[in-house]
Length: 193
Ligand SMILES: Nc1nc2[nH]cc(C(=O)O)c2c(=O)[nH]1
Ligand code: SF4
Ligand SMILES: [Mg+2]
Image (tube, rainbow, N blue to C red; front, side, top):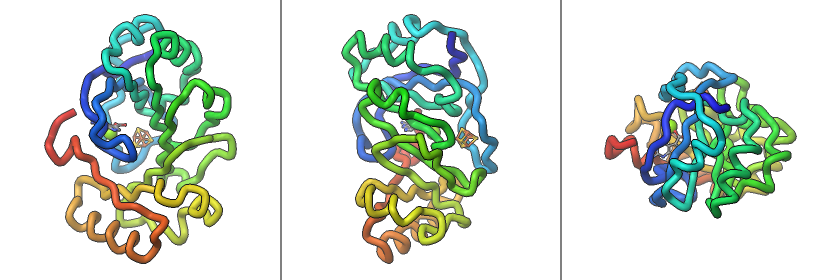
């Protein structure tokens, strides 16, 4: 059983798949407690893998939270793959993903200040997303090897409560280091889910 906050249909508002319609599965609970956490991940429903998969309408499904890797995601991912879904995960990078990598088409890792932007050595991913929050410094907080390996797939996302100022910071960071990329949260700008 999974503790679920919400299942909704929207458009990916962040990262490489920006603009793609997708079903979002927001699992409840998180292993961190970030100061600027903007997400309600309280529990609303208890659902089985099959019950969740039955509610996924779009081909793309984004599993998010909270922190989805606090669950054993295998049963859910197997159920989604059985239905031919393209599976995507949003994780804070603190837990391994190597054991579920083969069941995921895309993994977004978003390290957090709460852990000093650490990434678990068994956390495999396809792209990185850093929130530009006034404390984040690319030169200090992004490991050098990662910068080279993930060039053009490292998103700098302005923190939304101070969007104009943080966006400008993100611009300057990217202009100084061309492996970085300025991102947005489209859903927040247009105020949809
Ligand atoms: N539209 C939309 N795109 C998103 N991409 C990542 C989200 C998340 O909360 O993990 C999210 C979200 O909550 N809404
Ligand atoms: S990792 Fe994400 S969901 Fe968890 S507290 Fe931090 S911002 Fe919120
Ligand atoms: Mg969000």
